[in-house]
Image 1 (tube, rainbow, N blue to C red):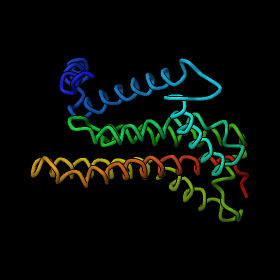
Image 2: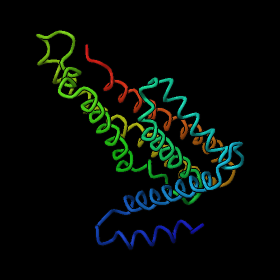
Image 3: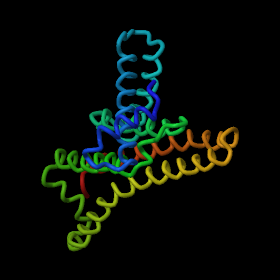
Length: 229
């Protein structure tokens, strides 16, 4: 694997004309690295499909099957069409979180631009799905149950929906950036055995944050699919 410093130097020189900050260049570089890793992983898992899975195919079937079951349990059968979106976000965020535990690597989810991009995708998908499902009647989701309170409820609902990408992006960014800072401090003070407990906790935090993001995305999309009352 290419050393992360050489990898970063290449991307910083490539992005220099765009006047992107050093932190932004790191996030973009590792985002592309993770996308390449996921692409290679998918090719390895599907290059020789068999009725009785083994090796990488068996591993990926367990991962994808687990996400699919979670989508069905949360959203029901109507959530099946949105499984590719949910699974892609979950795998990307999980790998982005975990890569930060490798010394010398930077998790893209510790950059607000990356988490905001994922949150905006969920936000836009939610309303696109709602409009596609209900058409003009989707506005009833913002009107509340009492007709004479509709003007007030509309602004409250709009504010609530606009806060979703903010909360999604800041929650993921805050947890991953905070953990990254703590790890850097521990490695600076005692670079050997002391950071190990924090790294083990980081594995747990990585899975939890990916799960929370995926769960909220499913809940938001499911809400847009329901009939307004």
